[in-house]
Length: 243
Image 1: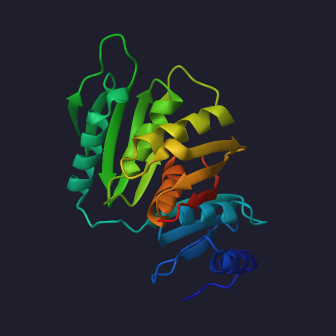
Image 2: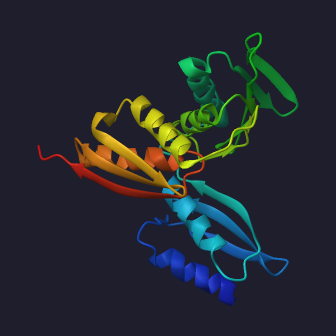
């Protein structure tokens, strides 16, 4: 049963007419708790749709808080065990994270897969439940936090990534830091030729310019940017080279 309410009606209208929010055949359920706390529950096609829907909700007048239960359709069905193993493998194989400890939390059990290197701060705790990957612990830079989150998003069975990693010592964030993180991610994606992609960031909006070899690369590059922690908007001005 669909609940009628001016706040909910406004969000539904924006959600259904937004050109870049891609819904699935299964409806996103909207409800209010305590009068003005919005609960979003359901599945969307991609991470861009999730972030944009959350932005629409946050900008809706009368909403004081949001409970995010939105998931993304996985590219490939996987069990939690499979998703966890892929995430762990990606973290262990990433050269820039080689000194960072990696642990898996499963219920009350903690398995240490790699201890933190001597004299280095940082350990990533991985937990997967219903396809949702949660990263906890502390890491030694914002760049490493963002990269760890993208590696988790790249696992085909991931339905969401909750990046709860703290940064020690704390770092201030800025547009240059975000642009650099996007550059790193694009360079690491084996399916993208990032050599001719320029990245510009202003107020958490990332703009991509340059050329790519095919529409698939254009879409993948945009998705990679959406995966980066802290990105609120993506302007994709990449040009596809004619064959």
